[in-house]
Image 1 (cartoon, rainbow, N blue to C red):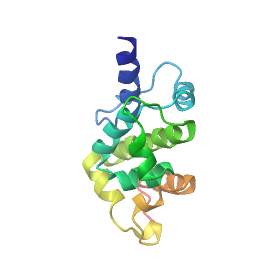
Image 2 (cartoon, rainbow, N blue to C red):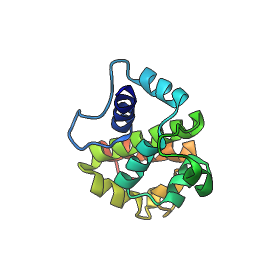
Image 3 (spheres, helix red, strand yellow):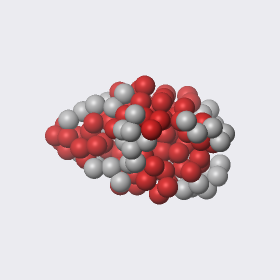
Image 4 (cartoon, rainbow, N blue to C red):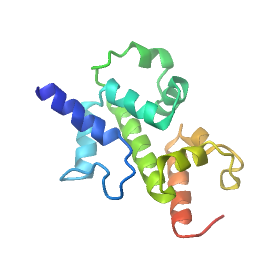
Amino acid sequence: MKHAKKYHVQENALMVVEEPGAAYVPGSGYFDFIQLSRSGVLKRALLNLSRQLSFSLAELAQVLHISERTLQRYADDAKLSADTSERAILLSQLYQRGTEVFGNLENFKEWMRTPLPAFNYQLPISLLDTTFGFQLILDELGRIEHGLFA
């Protein structure tokens, strides 16, 4: 039963929720995400996140910096590497933030797949292969939240 609880914690850490203030942030906040990154996210939790975000396996592999084949080879209960886990958590946090700014996940997912002037008419989702892309999107979300459109 201990394994089931661990999976539930990981699943909650990677899920995007639409209720204000309901995002997974346990007692010590970022320290829990650091520990989860170091110990490794379960592939099953990652695949649940992927379905929730409507990411294809190819898109997910690109964001995580691993090949599709490598991702496929992991067993569902296998833990991903620290780097891959960290990127998965960052992806989840980005979509959580976007959901908060846009009011719901579907609106944010649509925005992420729309060419935008703020990103040189690139799809925001295409920028997720770098940490700079993540930051650029987060910065734009901050501007939108405060009514400052570029």
